[in-house]
Image 1: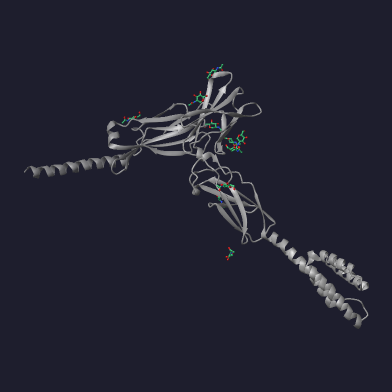
Image 2: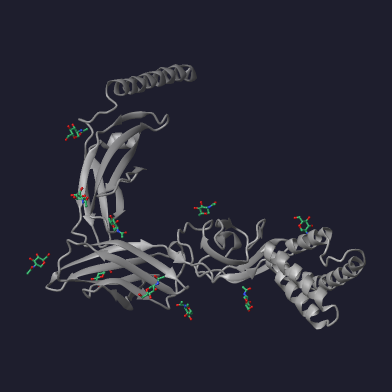
Length: 427
Ligand SMILES: *[C@@H]1O[C@H](CO)[C@@H](O)[C@H](O)[C@H]1NC(C)=O
Ligand SMILES: *[C@@H]1O[C@H](CO)[C@@H](O)[C@H](O)[C@H]1NC(C)=O
Ligand SMILES: *[C@@H]1O[C@H](CO)[C@@H](O)[C@H](O)[C@H]1NC(C)=O
Ligand SMILES: *[C@@H]1O[C@H](CO)[C@@H](O)[C@H](O)[C@H]1NC(C)=O
Ligand SMILES: *[C@@H]1O[C@H](CO)[C@@H](O)[C@H](O)[C@H]1NC(C)=O
Ligand SMILES: *[C@@H]1O[C@H](CO)[C@@H](O)[C@H](O)[C@H]1NC(C)=O
Ligand SMILES: *[C@@H]1O[C@H](CO)[C@@H](O)[C@H](O)[C@H]1NC(C)=O
Ligand SMILES: *[C@@H]1O[C@H](CO)[C@@H](O)[C@H](O)[C@H]1NC(C)=O
Ligand SMILES: *[C@@H]1O[C@H](CO)[C@@H](O)[C@H](O)[C@H]1NC(C)=O
Ligand SMILES: *[C@@H]1O[C@H](CO)[C@@H](O)[C@H](O)[C@H]1NC(C)=O
């Protein structure tokens, strides 16, 4: 009998439970999901050296906290910036690194969700909060790691900074604190940068920079600002090494090797750019590039630069490598062509003179007028026209050849005249 009674009781009970839950959802869902009056947030901040902790609490009952999923929406924006950062959190606090911002505006909203269905039960209004930091006297901070172990940071001093300040800097890396080795100063002897070398960087461990503005008149008004960097992301690589260039099959082949780096040296991490004289810069992921040329220039200057792109987001390009110059095949061709043309030309010159003389001999029998026929003149002219740049050489050569032959002097003078005329005409 016991079995028979228990089941209906359970059924009735579960039905009842279901109904009440359903009605509460309906009630809260339809009447006011945004139950601002009943749900209230309080925000406050605490500050330690380098960060601000924004915390909040609400007046949800213990039961509500237990029965529902509570989530928070946080939106915050640093002063004088446009980017709004939005986060959905389950914790009741957020650590905000101020860096060089002079404060932020934040707002928080509490949301209650049904555990199973994840339907929203109710939510609060936004609660706003403004955090105003002590004055920030520096801006435009930028740091760079280069040549493996060198580290430079620079900053500007804001115009509103008091006159009697000096700026000091140190950084923490892998649990150790290092002070600035060499300050970079402006004309007013204020420190506006720091140069350090022989540093061993752990590529994935943060560098926490501490910039302290000290009032030289009032030691109790010291202000410190903090900013952290991941070494790999601020590394400026040296230019690619062993850049070599060769001419092959009417294309320029360029080979190079990646420079040393503090981070991963995997092949796929590097992105290269190749610059050939004033041609368009091309992106290359391999360690070589082939440039087929259509139009030839006399001389090409080849340069390559590099940065990390795929393994790590890095915006800093290396300097361009020293230009490697190469002479175009065509330039070499022209030189060879000139040389190969010169010999036959000498020969041709000789032949020409011989032919002319021969012709003159024949002509002398038939007509008394000592002039080369039109045919020969045109032929000569064509020949000279085609070898335009060689004409002077040819002329000189003919003069020399003609000058040395004593016989038929008159004829030679005549021919010389004729040649000179033609040359001058062409020029
Ligand atoms: C939460 O706080 C608000 C404002 O103080 C109040 O009106 C509301 O009744 C409170 N809700 C609960 C559940 O305590
Ligand atoms: C930066 O923001 C603060 C707070 O919103 C404002 O008082 C200040 O004038 C702003 N400064 C500049 C340079 O816009
Ligand atoms: C320095 O920073 C200010 C604001 O942060 C910006 O307006 C200005 O253009 C920056 N100057 C340089 C030279 O980057
Ligand atoms: C780069 O570093 C090497 C070794 O640390 C050093 O010999 C060289 O002078 C540095 N180059 C520059 C341009 O500072
Ligand atoms: C780093 O600072 C030193 C000292 O002022 C300077 O000589 C060097 O050119 C700087 N290097 C870079 C890459 O900014
Ligand atoms: C930052 O540097 C200042 C000046 O040296 C020092 O007083 C302060 O304690 C440093 N902050 C941290 C977190 O080390
Ligand atoms: C020194 O600085 C502190 C903190 O900013 C300030 O309360 C105090 O009045 C200053 N003293 C003088 C002499 O300016
Ligand atoms: C670069 O060239 C030098 C000299 O030719 C050679 O000793 C070195 O091994 C080359 N480096 C690489 C990475 O190929
Ligand atoms: C030269 O290039 C042409 C066309 O690009 C190709 O057909 C030929 O095989 C190449 N010759 C050599 C030796 O690479
Ligand atoms: C080359 O790569 C850079 C960096 O990723 C990119 O900004 C640029 O648009 C690329 N240029 C071309 C022609 O693809």
